[in-house]
Structures are given as C-alpha cells and as structure tokens.
Amino acid sequence: MEKQNLILAFESSCDETSVAVVADGQTILSNVIATQINSHKRFGGVVPEVASRHHIEEITICIEDALKEANVTYDDLDAVAVTYGPGLVGALLVGVNAAKTVAYAHHLPLIPVNHMAGHIYAARFVKPFEFPLMALLVSGGHTELVYMQADGQFEIIGETRDDAAGEAYDKIGRVLGVPYPAGKVIDEMAHQGQDTFNFPRAMIDEDNYDFSFSGLKSAFINTVHHADQIGETLDKNDLAASFQASVVDVLMSKTLRVLKEYPVKQLVLAGGVAANHGLRERLQAELPTKFPNTELLLAPLKLCGDNGAMIGAAGYIQYQHHQFGDASLNADPSLEFDWMPKMPH
Amino acid sequence: MKLLAIETSNRPLSVAVLDDTKVLATTTTNVGRNHSSTLLPIIEKSISQAGLTADELDRVVVAAGPGSYTGLRIGVTTAKTLAFTLHKELVGLSSLAVLAGNIVTEGQLVAPLFDARRDNIFTGLYRIQAGQPVTELPDQHISVAEWCQQLAAYQESIVFVGSDVAQYADALQTQLGSQFVRAQPQLDLPQAVVLGLMGRTATPVAKIHDFVPNYLRLTQAEREWLAKHPKEDHAPYVEKI
Ligand SMILES: Nc1ncnc2c1ncn2[C@@H]1O[C@H](COP(=O)(O)OP(=O)(O)O)[C@@H](O)[C@H]1O
Ligand SMILES: [Mg+2]
Image 1 (spheres, rainbow over the protein chains, first blue to last red):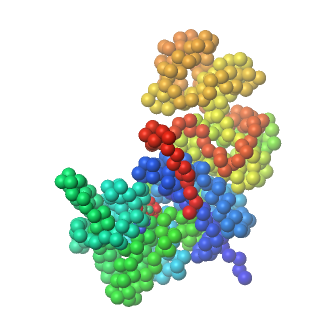
Image 2 (image 1 turned 60 degrees about the vertical axis):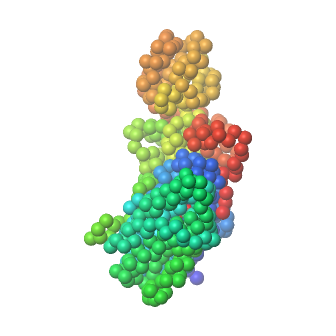
C-alpha cells in the first residue's frame, strides 16, 4: 500500500483556533477546533485583539491534540498548511508563525492557503470535485460566486457590494436580541415563522451576479424601530422568517442565473452561512429539477464554520502543484481570489 | 547549554544563538519591517551560522513583553511553538529588563521605557546588581507624569534607556532635573545576546501551553466589559467543539 499523504493544517483567521490532520486531501484524521464564541459574546462581535490573544493561548494545545487524535507523529507528516488570509491580521499571524515554525523545526514544506479556498474545499470531504464547478461561498465576511475550471483555480463571478450574508445575520441578530453569532439561532427562528413582512430582494432582477444585503438590513431595522416607536410588538419568528426568505431568495436567484451562463458539473455550497437550513433545503429542492446535470455538493454541516481540515484539503491540491511558501510567509488580511477576466464588476 | 534568544517586542528585532556564555551568532535589525516576514529567516540563518540545527538547541528564551502587541505575538508564538514542537525548555523574560541589561554600571538605577501612546509608557525601574538588572519597581503601564513622581522619591540618578526616550526627554528632564540621565544611543537597541545571557540561568516555564505574552494591559473591550460586569464570570472563553 502506498503511504498516505498527511498534512498538518492550521486555521486562525478569525475566532476559531484549529489544527487538523488530513490524509490525501480527503480523509480527516483529526480536526481540533477551539472556538472563542463565548468570549466574543461579551462584546456582541469579534474583538480582533481579544481574538489574537486567545489564539496564542490555544495554538500549541491544538497542535498536540490534533496529532494525538490522529495518532500520528511529526515523522509521519508530509507538509504543513496554513491560512494566511483573508482574515484578521493579528489572528492570522499566530497561525502563520506557528505553522512556519513547525515546518522549519521538522523540515516540512509549508503550504500557504487562502481561507476562502479552504471553505470551498470543505465540500471535497463529500466527494471528489468535477470541473467546471461553481461555488456559492457565503460566510461572515464574504458572499461570492466562484467559478473553478480546475483544482486551485478560483475566479470570482459575483460578490457582495456591501455586507456579507453572515454579517447581515449577525447585525439583525443584535436588533432581535440574539447573541453573537446570530446566524444559527435566526435560522431556527425562521423555521417557526412566516414570511409576512416581504422585505426587499436587493438587485434580484439586475443582470449581474452581485449581491447586496445592507438595504435588507436597513429595512429590517427600520421595521423593528418603527414598531417600537408606536408600541407595537412584532412576531420575532416572522421577522426572522421574512429576513431569511429575502436572503435565500436573492442567493437562489443569482445562483440559478449564473448556472445558466456557466454550465457546471457541480455546485458547491460552502462557508459559515452554508450551514443555513433554509438555504440548503431550497438548493436541494430546486437544483435537481432546474439543473439536472449539475450535482449539488453541500459542505458538511460540521465543516461550514472555520476549521483546519478544510485548509488541509485545499492545501493538498497545492501540495500536488508544488505551491510552497517559505520562512518569510506573512499574513495577508485582504488576500483575494482573481476576478474573472472580462467580467464587469 | 545551547540556546536561542528572540526579541521582537518593538520595532527592533534581535536574535542570538549562544553556547553557554559564548555568543555563536547574533543579528539585530532596526528597519521596522514586518517581523512576521523577517523573524524566522533570521532564526534559520543564525542557527545554521552557529553550526547547529534547531534540534540541537536546549532552550528558547523570548522577550515576553511588554511591547507592541503584534511584535510580542510574533516572537512569543514562534518561541512557544518551537519549544513545544521540539520539546525544548522555554524561558520568558521582561522586554524592559532586556533593555535595562544594556547598562552595566554596578548599583545604577535604570528606567527602560517603551512608548504606549498618549503620554503613557511601559516602564519599570531596575538596579544593576552583580551585572544583572534587578527589579526595583515592577514593569507597568503608566503616565509619564505619574512615573516621574514615583522616581523623584529615589533622589539618585536614573539612566533612561530605549529608542522611545527621545520623545519624552523634555518632559522627563523638566520633571526630574539632574536625576534624568540619557543612556548612550547605541544602548537603546535591545540585544538578544543580553536576553540569552539572562535567560540561560532563569527557570524555564512549567507549562509551555500556558505561556502567553505579558501585555501588561487588558484590551479596551475587556476593560470596558469588566467595568460594567464587575462580578460576572464569563469563562470558559474558549471551548473545544
Ligand atoms: N445556520 C446559519 N444560518 C445563517 N448564518 C449562519 C448559520 N450558521 C452560522 N452562520 C453565520 O456564519 C458566519 C460565520 O461563518 P464563517 O465561515 O466563520 O465566517 P468568516 O470566516 O467569514 O468569519 C456568521 O456570520 C454566522 O452568523
Ligand atoms: Mg470563515
């Protein structure tokens, strides 16, 4: 039997410290995640300096646990992969410097991974990618449609012009008194309510693949404030359901439109908001009838949020292409994918 | 004992490799480029110039703060990870003590300082005893005016050391008069060699996992939260999922 490729993968771009061991880019041997949510709940959102400090507290514990759970030693490893952007610079620096140090100490190649590529490759744990592929990438910081002609080639076809979808969830969560990060709870509330408020569906009819969620957010906040002023009580579940219906409608219509122009073999749903049940259900219901030749790959629920395993899966592709970094690797907080040539944006 | 010393608490960066008290290699820069890009290449080079591999080290010594939060994070993450991953001893020392260690006049009072913005400084008071800086007043975050009041009580000369002294020199001179003595500028850069020599005999940390920078300050968000929730315990802050 040929020896498996083993990658030790680091992720620290926001408020999760994670270290994973991934075999052949497709099997998770361990995926240790230390989440700081309970800390940042105090502040209603992620405080970058607090996040950076927690990462230093956790980083070596995560390395130790990841190796232990995977039952491997440094000698078994083939490479070290790490998220180097986009994200919070102080948070990224911890993972980057820890990963570089482990790579140096154990004479292993270093693989710098784009965090958003990592999110997409979370779906690789479901089954192998087939190209061309389209990814709907929805997270706390990003909302974009990414076209892939091959492994490791990312072209942005459309993206949000203001707030990311997850960001909108978190902001309206504050208005509803839902603690940070609100997405999961709003999703649950939405399932118990009705779309009675009919919030705007921004840019839904526009002939492009871009998104906008700040108008929806404002409409939501205005509705709640107006009701407060006149002493009216609104049904929170209906508010959540109406908000979610607008988000999902927009994401669905743009995605379905892009698939018309870009016929692809697979559609990947990934990123923190990919955990949204409303969105998953709509895609599962509509994609097979509307695009029977496009296979739906939903990132596993456990791998939608930030984690090291997805970085290991993306890193494995780069390993095969010998895309290595060196000891001078730095964090790049605003790292981006390429834009599709000739696409207006 | 073979030892690697790392100091990145502020704009200067200094790395040294020592074999007991013998300096094998050292590099100090003061170009203000990103330590995250420069630190590990300099460590690699220093260790190989010393004719060693990282494996052969016995101990890693790091300046653990106070200082620039970013600088401390880079130095401490690197030192902590290196010691952890290769099962080496780890020692953390005060970045201010390292700077004070540049002064060798026996019995001399030394006040190393780093700017902390808005007329505040990170500083401490040390006395040189048997060639080593010994704490007289602990490292702290304090306003220049308050610090001067505390120092005035000593009624002896105090050598101020550090690149940031320049911007407070007038204020210090005015408030301390002849007590204020400026160190020679070539002593303003922290030296990893000094750090290494101090760290050689220090006690290593018991649990490497628990080692973090000594920021000397809570974040603003935490200070404000604590002021509003004096009795509340919000732990655990970090949970494994
Ligand atoms: N079930 C859900 N429905 C909607 N949003 C969700 C759900 N679960 C998590 N989220 C959102 O996902 C975001 C976090 O995703 P993540 O990939 O970690 O974002 P980033 O890396 O951009 O910070 C948060 O904004 C959170 O509210
Ligand atoms: Mg993310």
